[in-house]
Length: 338
Image 1 (tube, helix red, strand yellow):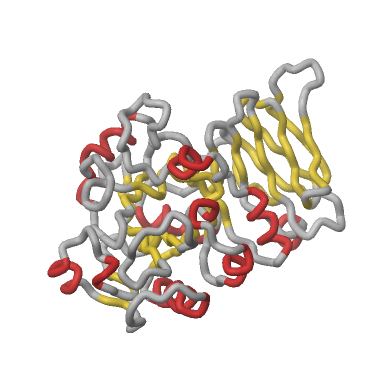
Image 2 (cartoon, rainbow, N blue to C red):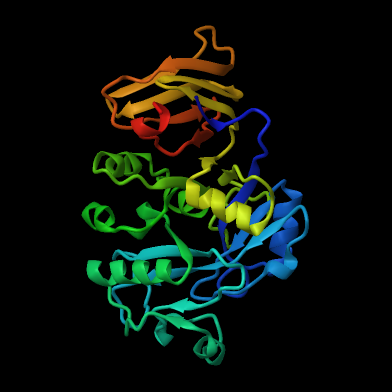
């Protein structure tokens, strides 16, 4: 028996990607904390562009700040933004709350942190100027991991990278399968097809949801980029070490609304319970996906099913009638058949 989510386990709502006025966001860190706490969140990572700051002094017993920042690599050596060329953005989440080192420091890319302050930070990896090609990106990811960071791959649709480039990278622990800000820009930042292609190539990234909020629009506006996608973290308790442990183990899932309250494997037999939904889907491949729903249109909250014996992986999604969804990571047969 393998219980991934148990009915009485605490689930902490997290936004793992946000921006304050320390880079190109509109709100102060304190305002972000207040807004997300009031919205029912328990965890917030303020990940300003090339600007790692330790915000843990804002943590309280019921609200945890994670340390990290968003790094980017562009074709332009001077970090010029080009809306018609690809680039890569990576969130670096510090396993040590006081780690504010900069990976692959390049002054052209430090547009927000004062240069004097950035130069005094600990620098990881003597990578030289930023260069946008596979080997450099891979070296950057490797240096970040060696330096104590968990690396996420951000908004792949917005970034416009070739699939073969994305498939080539090693070391990202999770893929942003939902990104509120990018979804509001392009309408196609639900990255389930890419996730499935990664799985079919043997790349088992976890998946998470995040806002990537900059708050240029007020709360309640149609284009407000807060509170649209989040990650339910299945940590033992709300402290830094426990949350990092849960992230490293993949004990979390992505959602834009539904909550999964139970996910238990009895070898290949699965039981899933959730908040009221239109349907529950088990994914064994794009051709082997099975839906559970009530033909009379009433909400479904429970499903039991057997995973096909030939499935190389399985993952689950829960969908509501208003288009909201929850999405789990993928599980290998050796995990659930033990």
